[in-house]
Image (tube, rainbow, N blue to C red; front, side, top):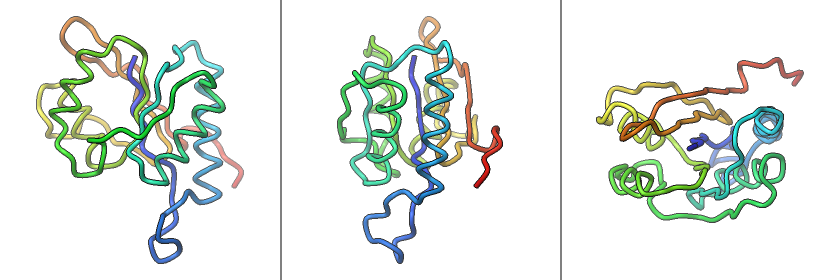
Length: 156
């Protein structure tokens, strides 16, 4: 299983140059992580993020709530405008359950490439703090779940 997650809501660059998660962003990611933890979905063995602070914070929240034993690391090739082809090839060789925390438009293009074989058009609308879960069927990937903070009622 492959979990693709757009980082949670982050501060603007004017508010903080490193763009950490906002309190709302942290709460939304926490809720989604807890929802996944209560589900029958597999737990990722590895969690990769882009290295940007907002992605790293999202990855660490997911790790604590969903997969405490997972290895968390910054991985090259996950920046917003990086080419998705190298990552797609890498994922096709991966055998363990994996979570990637990243950014748009990268995640959208990667999802489209894995599922439909081309980067455009977008097949799913990512939301900050949301998860798109893919599973491999033969040589293709299929979308098996989409969870966004908007799907649940949050008293914030």
